[in-house]
Figure 1 (spheres, rainbow, N blue to C red):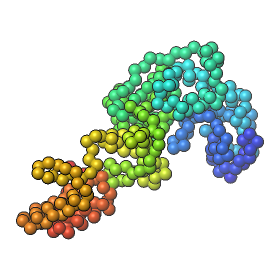
Figure 2: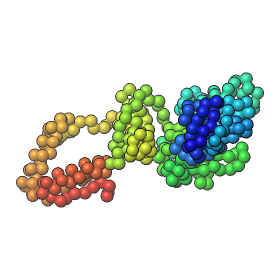
Figure 3: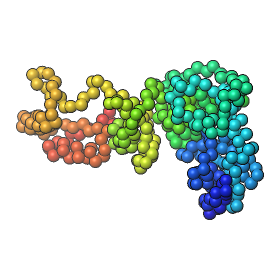
Figure 4: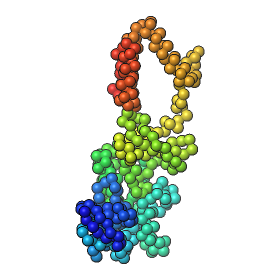
Length: 345
């Protein structure tokens, strides 16, 4: 263990930890834009600058040493933080009210912390570049006028999903997050999992047709048998968003494109919410007992007329392995091995 002092607070952490880790352990806030707990440190934003033993260092990269004295609110560190954030804001889209991340934006949080004032911003020359929003992806957009080049989306795509569909392109003030060959997102290797969108600290990567939920319901994704944990964002009686459950041991917060974006069927007016049986050539609503009794009676009729091999069963990839096993036992108990599975189709 290594002992250091952060604003006169004594902290003991494991050797190899960073100043940022130590500050988090004792609840001391250090502003940052490019740091994410699920990704490797990047140190690109320079907003987490602190004074350690009289020298300015980036807290997310600087390792702790025994007896180190850290000043979070040192004058030199504050100047660097304020300057970096001001430079970001001069090129940033200032229309925050229509941004999906309004009031939940890391840039807003950090700008407020470092003390950005309207008077100071009025002295700086704004030069927001007119860049077309990439709306080619069916689930989320890329608005580069809101991008702060934190690299979180790039590292997420590489470290979490292993696809590397995004990277930094061009140089200097023209640097941007782009796909290979600067193509539209829909033309790239992007799998539309939305992991980058979930971690984006601003509104640069934003869900299409976003509605903010007023409550969340913990659930399990029903698209396959893996059993990923999810939180359903609900507004009234409609599901308006899905996010992964980080406490779930199966997926640890990660989701595929179907799990994250494939929820619109829940709200569809044609969705079946009760069994239907045919009476006089018409499909009418019935109870589960009525429907199951009908199925059982038809099974018996078919077996009596044509034998058990006239029956067959098709299982579903949306069911768990245990459910599929029970289904196979049911079909075989009727005397037939005619079984198939939708995952093969």
